[in-house]
Length: 349
Ligand SMILES: C[S@@+](CC[C@H](N)C(=O)[O-])C[C@H]1O[C@@H](n2cnc3c(N)ncnc32)[C@H](O)[C@@H]1O
Image (cartoon, rainbow, N blue to C red; front, side, top):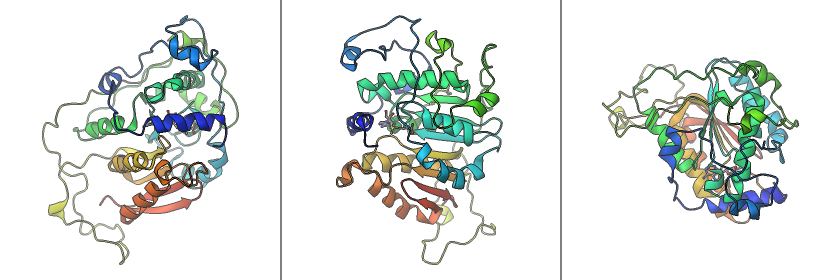
């Protein structure tokens, strides 16, 4: 990221430095896909910030202005795709979505099995007002792909979204909410996934999105004030488990009496961390997402070798990634260390 977009992105990232995270969070979760009036992407951003609602029938101009996924697609193809593609019910979390390009790549290449879905977290203009345009493009691109129904969008900072996901994971198992049926004039999810803009293609404009008729993903169950009853640990001690013993130099897992009762039910197969690049935000994202990741799940950090702010550790993900890998190294195997870092979760404790 060394262009003007990156500079704009960095400005937004810096705007998320503080933890004033939860504004509007719960109402967004309860009604996650309500459309709010957005400024026109065709107008200068300075005007956008001052202007209020525009014509509802004015379509956005969905297009990708940057491509941060294709340069690394071969690494995903090597480590992620073989483990997850085609499997039923794969669930992924993406923190930081921009225009939806990586989200659509994940849907087309990783989340290809039946019932697979993606949770997208991005505050967009809540973190940085000019990013209202990105939210509009994100929504339009998802609608254009026909994949909106497989995406749950949490419009908030990750520091607000992850506690909500953890709260949900602490609830007793509930039947999955049905995904909405695709509109009659829309392609179904499967062919759309195959036809989704894989790497370089910009999505066409979709009037349906502008008209507010894009498929609405299943609403999230509202977070409850407290778990009704303590859940048994989903990771009970298994002294005779075939799980390989940790290497001698690694610390042993905690004894059973120190394992928390209220361990969340991990539900994610993939966590992709590409939100705020501040090291405090990156370590927070990783630590809070980790309990949600299944054993056998995959964690990907973007921008480990980000050239920007390479000399400013506060504004760079590297130290956070290093710290996480050190603290959780006994529960994971590092698969790849390059521009991105990819890890496989090997143990629960
Ligand atoms: C580099 S872009 C993501 C790029 C995207 N993954 C892709 O490859 O197309 C970073 C995104 O993180 C979002 N972001 C910034 N702070 C965030 C936070 N605290 N939580 C979640 N997302 C955040 C920004 O709004 C921006 O859209």
